[in-house]
Image (cartoon, rainbow, N blue to C red; front, side, top):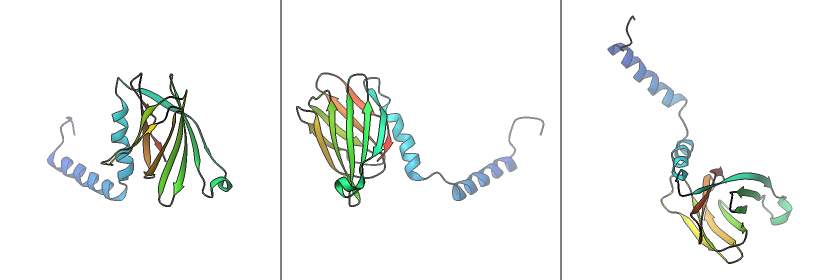
Length: 153
């Protein structure tokens, strides 16, 4: 073909090929939802807290294997323990330096946001969180929101 235009048969072939690929090797919906949701943290008013440490706690400590995560931004460190409770998760956390804040868990595809208030010592607990991609959003009294990187809980 000497020009860059597609013929009708080329367009039909591309449609058929696209359908075949979608059927055989489709992108999982959870991956698609996480990709779409990852753009939502890009707010000029929010600070990004990067994941700087992730490790598994010993299974003997609580009976189930928990994960310890540390997120760090310029103004705050967010330390969390993610504990499996049946088919859900409990998130127990600490803000450093300690301060009161509103802490929420955002998950792609979820209509509701789980949230709680951190006390004066920066401690918080979130129950009934779904496993999967998530980020924490901390709204401090004296600054804008701080969002953690998306991570799989």
